Image 1 (tube, rainbow, N blue to C red):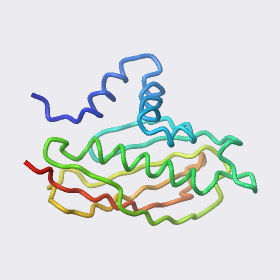
Image 2 (cartoon, one colour):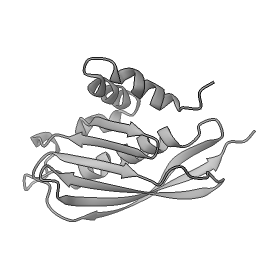
Image 3 (cartoon, rainbow, N blue to C red):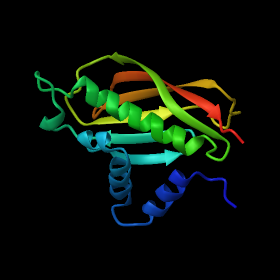
Length: 158
């Protein structure tokens, strides 16, 4: 029996399909509808790593014509959540977001790409605060936003 997470299994299956990344991203937004507001596309998902992009479009702009702060938070939370869900051993542990600290480093006036990454492999503990760093880049590959998202990891009761 495979120890690979269900999310990674679905990701792998979608990769063999035409427009698989788009299809996977739509499925994620169906499961967690709020993320659909930014229309993300997950580009890569593996143990300890997730990246996704969001197109620059008027629907996610603020009053000055740049990407809204909350849209930046959304892509960060999406990447962190997908990465943790794909990485935490689902048979023995569970997780939930606990807090988020963000830094807006520059106006986002282009498409954006978010990357969530942790050191892996690692030992999973009970009642652990896992801080997931997320970096968001503009289309010129300039760092424009960072987030530290704390995920609360607990062992499942047996």
